[in-house]
Amino acid sequence: MPGGITIVEGGVAELDPVMRVMEDSFDPAYGEAWTAAQCAGLMPMPGVWLTLARDGDEVLGFALGRIVLKEAELLLLAVRRDGQRQGIGQMLLDRFMLVATTRGADRLHLEVRDGNPAIKLYSKAGFSEVGRRRNYYTGRDGQIYDALTLTRAATF
Image (cartoon, rainbow, N blue to C red; front, side, top):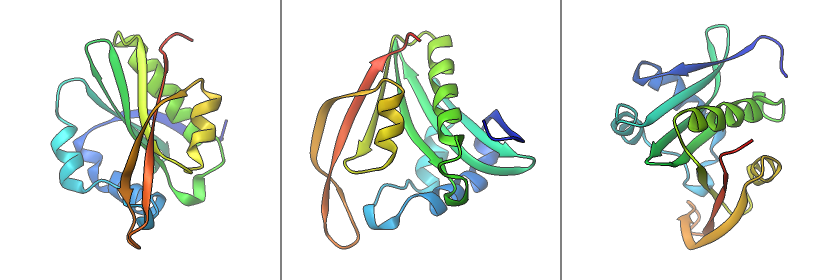
């Protein structure tokens, strides 16, 4: 586990650093990043939570999740490029799963672009593919990408 990194709950007040992380971590070629308006509109809704990875005052990554009834969805997970492959994504995913379970989820879901390196992280955590949305993402160059739907039980 990276030294000095803390995992804390966040809120709408952290929207600016969340957007900086998203702009840094999501390659614009794939069209996956959300806008500030999309995040701000969702974050105050019931069942939605934001988790931050911090090094002091600096936000290195975040996870945005929501629960509806007994199903939780990982909406976004991002780590700044200079913090990737250092265990921060795993820490955020672990916290998402813990919070979801604590809030009563029995299933965990997420969607990810086919070919995204994060698929390895999700597979290692027990997520498996249950569906595919053909032609879901359109990159800036006009190339089309599928979205994979992954799921797992919320038990550890």
